[in-house]
Image (tube, rainbow, N blue to C red):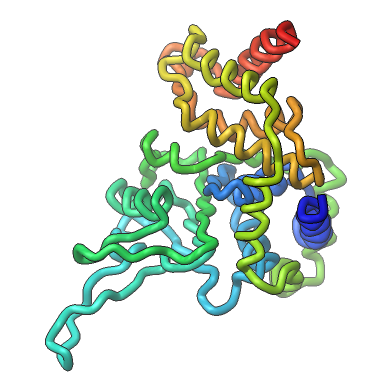
Length: 327
């Protein structure tokens, strides 16, 4: 339990720093961190001005990745080319040969801001990096260094000048974490208090929690090896994934990869509490973010206003009843 307790201690310290930087969004931050511990990539979705980019920057600083090119940011625009992300070959007149110029993807923590503003061919340039942790430039494959993860942001309300991510690209993200407006009146007052006398963003004062970024790799290994998934939980995850394919509201349900990501995310979520065994509640807590972009609703249901979260709620209820009957 020692390694797991160090993860929960790290999480407590990180959230203490976030309490001085971000007002609210504790669950969204926890989900994002769980996704990173599960060795996945995160898509943050929300309207402008709710601290999506700030959360990503704060995570990078807390993980000691802000220095020495451990953190890179790509601001997506329609004229952003694939070479601007992964790199290209540049001619060297002295050597009379081409040499690779590595793009910002060669980092530990890549923030892709407003990813849906990039054209599809630029979005697809991230596919190989996100899935295989490698990039091909001029026929030569280059491995990315560990840890490597992507946090992308997108604004769901603007349609003009944006390019919705195709399902294949969305599936590379272990979670799509949806962020809404602050929940309470008091939270909005606290936000004003936080910024009343500041000339810089609060994230500039965010303290580094770990000294060596490679500790993130160690924590990922602990989650993978030390957190157990009982047979009941595996049946629950399987029921969830299979039920998602037969719901009458759904055109396409979740693939086996969704089940894998659901299990890994639940393991990481449990580890953040210092537990070495996944519980049903851990699966429930990550299910919405893991599945909301992996369930394709029928067109008529979308027109009726049905949301993926509505369907997921029904799936969880049926799946839990099914597995608890077998106990």
